[in-house]
Length: 488
View 1 (cartoon, rainbow, N blue to C red):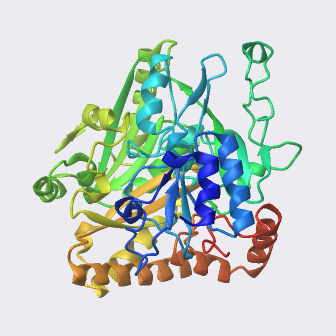
View 2 (cartoon, rainbow, N blue to C red):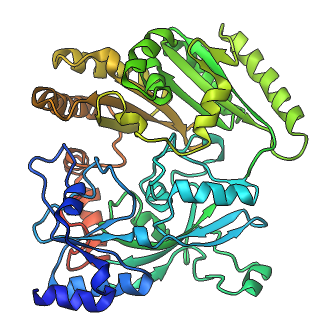
């Protein structure tokens, strides 16, 4: 056994180092990277002290570290090592829920806490958390929030990091920092009684340190705990649909809903996207795609605890009136799906297999930020590229999620692909690359630049690249944290 490994074993113990080839392979499955780089081995710290020691060890030995906290599958490339000899730092073992505080509607969690673990515990206290659409049950809550995966509730989203608050960060140089009001760690119950609660995101001072680790793909440091804002679990709720034959028919209607902050959940999807969500078997997808409306707006209305039924009824009537103004109809069910059926799916993590992988076993994703009125043009571009690459356009799932109270929207294309078919894989990779370039030229903002998107984004903005590299030099001077990602 080499000296590096022995020194690391002193930190985490023998059981904390895993070099099983099958485990290594699970972090090398991203099909956008050919051939994938395999990690040297994996290490599983048990607490923040061990994380800090691992980072200091990496600086001393010049060993690249790749942080991971979610379970598989990993298919965006951020957990695939870019350099040989890299070590996976698997934070999934740090899975304590440190505190759930109903009074302040706050939960403090470690990076290994998944949606599958957190949601039932919150519900016991009568709370919930704003979620992305159908996350995997083994998806780390902190990783999801740090990577700015869009949540389904735009009216509660005050910024793109919502509902993330204070963090404990171990930077790439080994220093530990508490962002926001995270210095109030609330280790004693009397701290909570005094109101010393880590509820603020910005700070300390006027600097938003938590933004430096946001969408950084683990290239700045590792977050070892975070406070997240929660909501009261409603006593009564309904979900309705607004079906339409064309996306243009629902754009102005959706803008009107966003203006008045109507709907707790609000998003748009095409028939393929909704079919992938609803189906559990491959043969169900085709029949559902033919049955469902071409486009559907989903609107969830929650009643809270005070006059919940009256609140839902009032909003339901208002939204129905607005729909009629635009020549649309709000219905509790569409052919192939009832509102209650979809609502039950949205309240929980996704069942296996993951919904984006159900149709063909694999999936490419193209997602970016834009404005709602520009999405029809982006979709036309995507369909045009699909036809040029002989990719079946009806298979493309489209998910449009308003964000940040509607000032922008997340536009996502889901491209199912059969991993076992080499011809199909090559075709989908070419489509992914060419469509990304065209959409970027059209104004698509790739705010989470995975893989080839990083070169597109940073090469187009030299000043941002220079500033980002300077920040990296401050917090990770030896470039040990996930090197090769972004512009590093």
